Image (tube, rainbow, N blue to C red):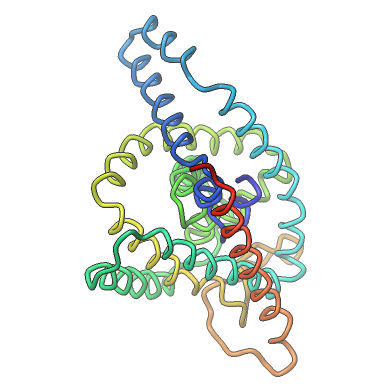
Length: 289
């Protein structure tokens, strides 16, 4: 899940779903949020009782694995974003396309209403992203906090990754840089945002998914389709911040590749699609009933 969430394409929630641990994850997060709610009310005893009842044998290894993957991959991805933006955009583009296919398979009902939701969400997001200013070069503490809260909410949604949300709001490069450089102050703000976002969002997610699962998934599919704009490899690839040249590279420009630059990003996109679909199929076959 950590490896999936560190790149803007595959959802950690999707990985949890296809591997059969999604419901356990959501239940554990909701239990943790309720324990924090009990503490906020001043009920220390009730908080302790809820805390010791949490599924730590599940949560601790999961969190440790995710954290290890994020830290290990941050440096590699940051370097490649600067050195090979078109190729990285091609990989991410393929990951998102495959995630759309996976998300479509999660729908339990396909109706004209779901099609309309997908279409409206895709069109709105596509045009809104055309107005974004690109990566945020010098985020404020509040922006780091808000980015963590938004990204963690997406992490537990099947079909959309937290890092993809960061890319959409122009915070992906800044967060990856913070992790890679071990900037503990900004990382703490991101972590605090994650805790608050999970606590507030997990209960709402459970309630909404129980009552309008297909509509929510249709909206997420439309979001991913429209957001492919920021992953189109040409002319600029993924939006990044080039510190060496003190330059911000916009990731929303659209153009056609020249004859000598289309092959590698396209090939990598195809490989990314195949990898995600294979992982999803393996997960379906071996997930517990």
